[in-house]
Length: 472
Image (tube, rainbow, N blue to C red; front, side, top):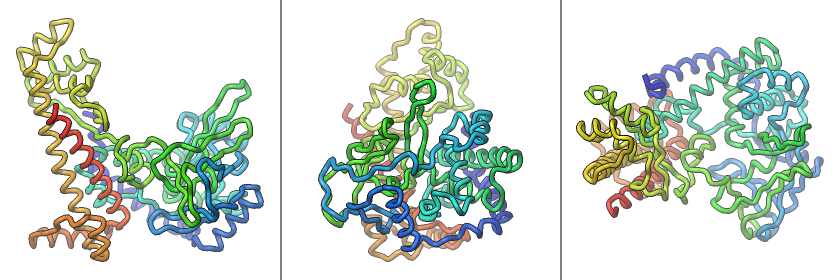
């Protein structure tokens, strides 16, 4: 069985029910972490920055309507001006902070091979200590996230027409595996963190913080070799994303993160930075937002499977093996890459669509050259496949609009998000919608908007592919 077939909606629902039970059993412990994010905690954070020589002269931190905190210009800022400098001493990093922790990391494969796991651990340790040096920073970190690792079954079901559904489900399974591993290692064996600080909810929180805010830093080891680590960088991680040029650098000589302005910024405007050339699929999975202004780094995952009842299934697998491919692989169709000149894509399609006689001949011949008719057959298949995917994504987008309207959003807000998309429903559709919305695990508006945004950019990308295929 293809391992990825385990990452389906029924298995996700079963996993969600198990973790919901775990959360309920640990609910008394989680109450200790209820804390308000208010002006007092923000003032304490700013004071902490100033006491540790992190300047904020040109900056003011304010709450935004949909992205949490943001950083705004208090003075006019010219392009390429240094606006933030944060020393290593102010960062929570994946560099083990004690000899005991260093030995644990070295002896454990999951910690030593995945720096983010060590960063999660260090964050949990600091958050369990009310006297932590980083307490003013920890107290302003967000508690809620629009990440797929927090989706309930209804929300995950909305992704069924997106090619990243399995990735979203897989991340949930990975999160549970990591928690169970850390429970055995750190809670039971070494007792580094005790309840109420190491519940599944707190682990999810720390994992979400690291996923959405981690940044790479570098240092020289005793052998004078460059090592890469991950860090949570106070203040720097409050800047929101905009397309542009990377203007942040880690200075190894001075052990400091430096950020320059990528634009001229007027007083009162938000100061934005770029998170790098990341696809919307990655931003959706690991940052909890979608940048609808660009699809240039985006991709669609295409799965090409050989039907189980195909009498030539083994020969097709052998042909794919000849191309260096295996069944079950997914192909990323990337923006800007002509589909008709993708060797990997068409090799998969050759294996799937080649006729019996041509298939036998191709297995005998040392080299393979596709016939014109086979190339045309592959192109036609691809056009039909993209049209089917488009239909599913448009249904997904429309359903998000209907759910937002049913979630008591203002009519004008829904119209802005959906841009006047038709929402006419039969009585049965209305009844189904009311049932879905009234469930205890009701879809949160932020998550629906996020899924709606993903559908929009993936539709745009597929339409670009379809246009290029029709022209070819």
